[in-house]
Image (cartoon, rainbow, N blue to C red):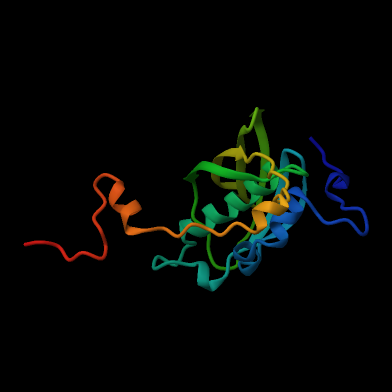
Length: 182
C-alpha cells in the first residue's frame, strides 16, 4: 500500500493531535535520533541510525534499542488524530544482529482495531534484510472528561482533614503514630 503522507499534515495554527502530538513530546525517541519519516491513521515509517551508545558488550545493537525503535513506530501507527493510545503489550523477535552505523527503517501497520483495542505489526529492516519483527497491542484511553466548575457554595466549604481514626478504621492498617508493641 502506498502512502502519500498527506494524512499527517497539521493545518497551520492548529495544535497537532494523535501521533504528531505524542512524538512532539517523546524525548526518549528524539534523544536516540529516531525520525518519523511518514505516518497516517493505522500506519507509520520511522528511521534510526545505530550509534555507539546503542551497542552492547558483543559489539552489536542492544535489543532494548531495537525494541524501543519498533515500539515508537507502533506508537506512531496506533495514535489516531484526536486519540490517546498506549501500549498494552508488545513482543519482538530479533532475527539478525545490527551494528554501529547501520541505518534501520521500521514500517508498522494496523492488523486490526476493534473498539478501544488494536494489534499492530512492525518490521525493522536494514536495507532489504528484516532484522526484527514486533507485534504491539494497543489500548485507546477514554476521552478526558471536561473540567466542571464547582458550585459557588462548594468553594466556601473547608476540606475535611484525614485523621488517625480514619486510618485505624481501615482493617489491617496500623496507626502510623503508635509505636509497634513487642
